[in-house]
Length: 251
Length: 137
Length: 121
Ligand code: SF4
Ligand code: FES
Image 1 (cartoon, rainbow over the protein chains, first blue to last red):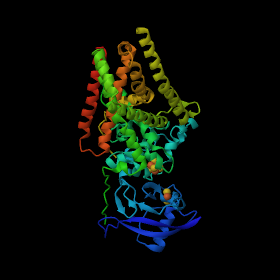
Image 2 (cartoon, rainbow over the protein chains, first blue to last red; image 1 turned 180 degrees about the vertical axis):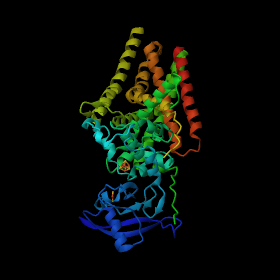
Image 3 (tube, rainbow over the protein chains, first blue to last red; image 1 turned 90 degrees about the horizontal axis):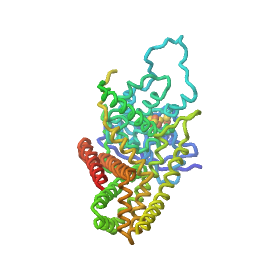
Image 4 (cartoon, chains in turn brown, yellow, red; image 1 turned 30 degrees about the vertical axis):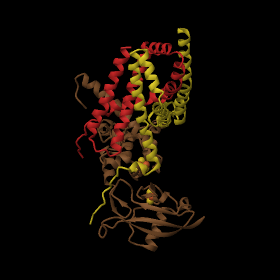
């Protein structure tokens, strides 16, 4: 299997351009040519000014996300052979994020949202290393494991129309990470995270479009995590209501 | 020099991808179902106003536009049910001794009883009303 | 890093009613539409009086009344929830708060009507 394919790339150079424009290249491909390989070919052979992100070229660093024919995909995990029958492949920077240059998106909003939910193991009391490991059974681990496979690639943010509609929405990956730590038997940070899930820009801005889970390259299923988060937030709401009715403080 | 292009979602975003169109179709099922529920609410009122009013309501429900609405409502509620049961396993997590109940089991546990309801309840209603009408005559 | 805590959303109330309505519709909706579409007209074609009495009896029974009320009310909350979010999705330039008040207010009002009319049967 081999051939050559027209690759149309959206260009934007902030120094010279006021609006994005399109540039086409003819790229030779064989069985194992990825979209990232195609971009590297273009940069090496055709036009050295093209900018895009990548590092690991094995679907683990999460930096090579682009829109391939209007679908968010990892460049290194998407192969030209799948598009052999198409007239061309069209590469754009990720949807719903600002474009810095060519295919490079500004992922800061996503990173800020991820930081908001405090996705790290929290313990009420710091433990000395001598105290030993905090043990966890395989069944306890299975409760969150798939949610921990996220590589922060942002494809789900490009897939999420609610994030596009409201950039303050914490979004799929952040809410998934919140759920991942809330479900971890070793974690004690749930109380710190719940207010962010409970807020208007937390789980409740999600309308279960579900496309995030379709595009996730790691099968994390963020839509499932968010909607399980809704159940948790619902319980939290009811408990708070009960507390209020008994004359307690709003939390 | 930074001069980022801000993202902008246009009002027609939902038309641009099949996944979004499917989502919108799912959400749109609410419109015929809302109108249908209004008709039923109206029917409850007419039922209480006596036989003639009830008969007029039935005639109203059998007028072509209302038949069309009910046909659309039937399709809508079936699409709603189908998509709803697809999503159930994503929300409902039932722990078992070895992990959690697999999604396809959960889905089956909803779809099978639901399909029975869809088939048996109309038959049951048919039978019960027939019984009543027969006994009352 | 300190960050002010966001205001708690009231969505859980709406979502619970939406979810209950969605589940009820998924299980009973198709049967209900089939009944009004096929069963009622066919049966009532020959004996309206008996049919009227039958439906009246069914809805006067506490269980029937409760089911009818839940069915109607939850359907209103379910559908109006989706329609409100739909307006936001379609970029209709109305404030979410206004849409919420009108939408869920309508559902509440229609539920009250259903309750009053069912009790009056
Ligand atoms: S949830 Fe999936 S799509 Fe989203 S950032 Fe993580 S790995 Fe990427
Ligand atoms: S280059 Fe690292 S994920 Fe593609």
